[in-house]
Image 1 (spheres, rainbow, N blue to C red):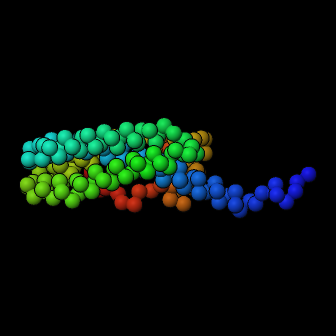
Image 2 (image 1 turned 90 degrees about the vertical axis):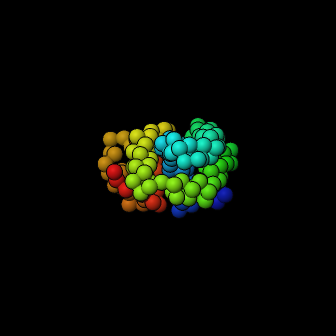
Image 3 (image 1 turned 180 degrees about the horizontal axis):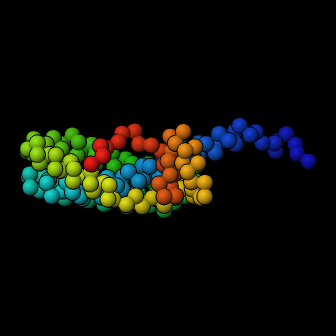
Length: 177
């Protein structure tokens, strides 16, 4: 026999499930994008050295290694674990600290030293490296036999599955090369 204190509310349970799926999909996307960015950025390091930014390249390699360590730590922990939020937050903070340095200090210097052709080549090399980088994100929902229908349904709410990993659509997309 149930009493009022043990009765569940369906809308609350569904909302909790939606919120958890949003959290997992967003975390998967952050993990995937930080990994891909870090792998692809190695292409730029040779240009940094050639244009007087060798110290910045070394600094970036160290910072990317720390971001990768945090990302892999977050990727190895279930989002339901209490420490997950703290670890993913540290990874995202480290990533944005690094990207702010790159965008505000390093890239303007590099851009001013590159010819339009060199700039185009570096951008294309970076995008090719992004396309070849493995996502390595492992968590997520199995698509199973109904993958096509599931993909369509998830796309309606802004999610996608890459391999077996639930993701959200990125806010910005690179051009196809």
